[in-house]
Amino acid sequence: MVDDAVKKLPIKKTYRGKKMSKLIVGLTASLLASGLLGSSGQIVEPPTTNNAIVAQANEQTLIQQNRDLLLKNGQTAKNIAAKVGAPASKDAAPSGSNPLQVNQQLILQNRAIFTSIATKVGATVPSVAGPGAGDLAAENHKLLLGNRQIVRAIAEKLGVKLPAPPELSGSMVQKNNTLLQGNGKALAAIAAKVGATVAK
Image (cartoon, rainbow, N blue to C red):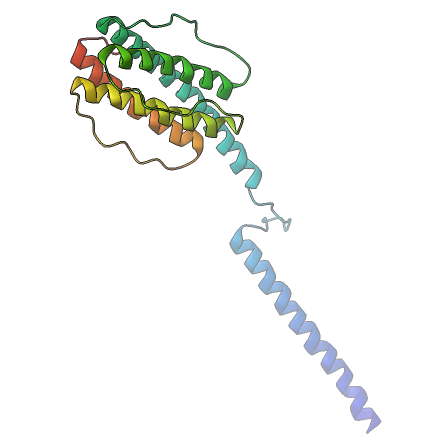
């Protein structure tokens, strides 16, 4: 009886060992399949950091693109103002270390020109929000929505038919980019109506 019990011990140990080996093999296969285990057997960290860096770089590129669009739209607005006889500020383009802050200053400069044009052609200037103290990208978004209202009011007064505003999606910076592109097209249509040059 004792001998039989003793003989069974190695069998249990072997069974457990085989079970553990299968678990290890299964786990290794899962890690390899998911890309979390390298060929050398080292655990590979997910590329979260790289993705974040790429996303940030794309965001910075969009912010710069937004600045370029603001400058272009502002120049087109100045050309329209000159054609209709509306006074327009000749302020130099703002500069600074914070690109979103610079963009906000450009948005406000453009708003002043849009408002001047609207007043000159007899368009009703809508009541729009001014700058706040929140997140800059979000505040810029609010300001750009206001600018779009003013530009569309000018177009309506001049009999320029504009398409429906584009749908906004993505991050605030992406939404702002869409708004600026839409405003650029609206300004181009207004410029064509009054015979002004569209900035390039």
